[in-house]
Length: 366
Image (cartoon, rainbow, N blue to C red; front, side):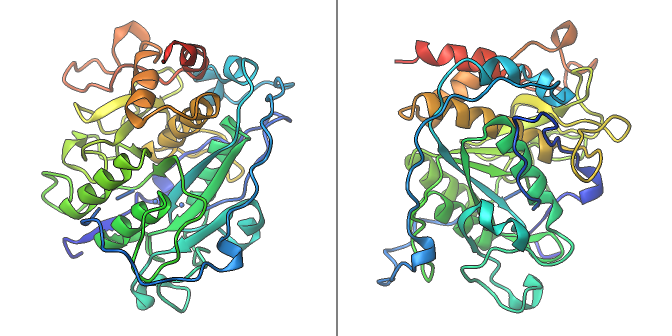
């Protein structure tokens, strides 16, 4: 694999939770994690097609209390208390992955396909306005979408395809996908008129050596941060330090590792100083329940945090990425026994994301 390419974790190594409670609507399936470039010059004049025009903002609502037992992963983040605590406005969340299935198109805001190599795309063309996934990679993004909407039914989801039919990602495609998701100009693509406040990037680079963040991806991440967008990434599934990974080890990214049902670091999950906090990711023996059966992985841990972050922004749209990060990390629930792993070198951030505590703490942010 060329050094400029990124690969997504294998689907078999993932696990996500789909809401089983009657009040948690499920979204359709889809799937990938990250690199950047410098902010491009203003693109040529582009006519925004009708299907990319901004959608009307739905009125705020108060989430209804759950009427059935929540899946274990939602219980682990204390979602019930968060969902009955406040009125939440809608927030746009972008999912950078392999694109959605066509049957899911009606439930998503207009997205974009940034896979530039037509031969690898698997859909018969290169970049275009159709972010539908090619056969074989659609499940992963759908699981992420289901999980985010299960945590926050008010989340408005934008699918941005950056992974090809084999789950591989070119650094330039990832960088452009990040920029576009945030509403920044990308040459040759229409402006995203539904810019995201949160980007979920459940993907990671596996080129060797894993020593630093890809510079092109870092440049895009810096531009996105200035735009006021929080990027949440999975730490990756190699049971090693995450600091050399892209985007997990990149500056400004909120990196999330995975815990098992007992609240311990999942055996596959990456760790270390790049990790900000943890969320349920499950294991093969005890995965997160989904419409496709149990799944596990840090790719599924990250959307827990992205979903909770969207709740916080729904309560206070003025929150900056730095304030969101602070709220999520300082309100995290402690690990059992005070640490995520018997090996003290394998750290997992400040704790397990706690939706209820984070929502209650929003009022303390001025």
